[in-house]
Length: 574
Image (cartoon, rainbow, N blue to C red):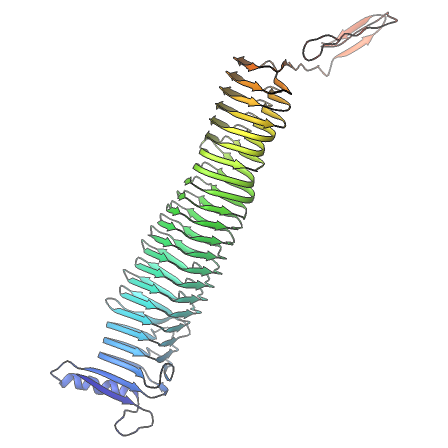
């Protein structure tokens, strides 16, 4: 049976002068009644300075529509509920930041077309073992908190929270749909040791991560838009799990971050104009990232750092600075990725990290892959295509790269190893090359099998300083200058290789190269370099006295006529 109470501040007959008196009347009726009763309290328009305690099955209704009734309280809780309470159309305003403005202490609470105003602190609190539903309501400045409780939020607006706009903690379960969160000083939604589903929501202008999952939380996000946040769009930390689907993040520091053991699944998302990275995975976090796009990330599109280990598949990265970077002892697996239009490296592996790349396409970047670090720095590439880059692969430091089925097209240099780095090439191709197909310098080492270089404006292979090159079963065609050039103190082997074309030289070497089964119609030049001792002197006094050694010199005396014979590089005398 429903009992109706009418509240009017004008003290009309049959009405109650304030809301508290009506609630007390209903409580008294419940105490003496043998039947279960419910109450509807219709409240006339006006401002009510009182704190409310609602018990039992009660509806509080603004008789003249949403916003017509304002309940204010300077100190203490504005509304505390026990039982099954529904509030429709009221404005609840508290001023005490030390107390919950609205608290569900027991049972369930529904706020429908309600506005909750607080200067800070907790605006609405679902205390342990309660159920709170928020519908079509507005929450200003204060935090909406679910503690070990169950919450449902639909079509609500949270504005300028002094802390987190919404928090689910200590095992709470929350569903947030169709809502907008704006201007929170810390997080838009924080899920800590709790579970939350966030769908069809807009989040903007938060001071830290718009969505934060920490302390083994589970956060599920779908179809959301996140814009203009100072921190991360979405962040998973401290072994949190969950998923993110069909969500767009624009103008965040990091589009999505995972740290300290987190392991999310991210699918079909777009991260645009991030001020640092599109996706960052660090401090032993993992995660799988599928069918995502990163556009114009100012620093790195996808970054694995400090022990991160992401798996990235079917993703696209365009614009910005660096495409994918694996650094600071991290790992990463990347497959079916497309990277284009970067002024820096498409792929980067540094500082003891390991990157594995399969079925990757790189277009119009300054560098394709660059590696640098100690011997634990490794990059494995399989079926990777580089086009219109300066250098397809650059290995430095003591790093090691292994390439299988890698192609470089319209590049300055195909494959480069310098310092003490090593490159292992299997079934690789470089075509339309301006400088060289494979270049070795410093103490770099390159081992190649079935390497093809076609259409080089310079060299097919080039080795300088103390570099080492070992190439087998390979082919170099139409290299304008030389098929293989060995200079300085470099060394190596060419085994069962072919140099084809109508111009240039097949091989120019320094006598430190083993040629086994070389097939070519072009010239092979043995250009052994001998250095003249700079301290040697020649003194002519009615004859010759030589102090020190003189090599490749012509000396003459007591002659009116001198004939000089000089051998060309091919050994012919002129």
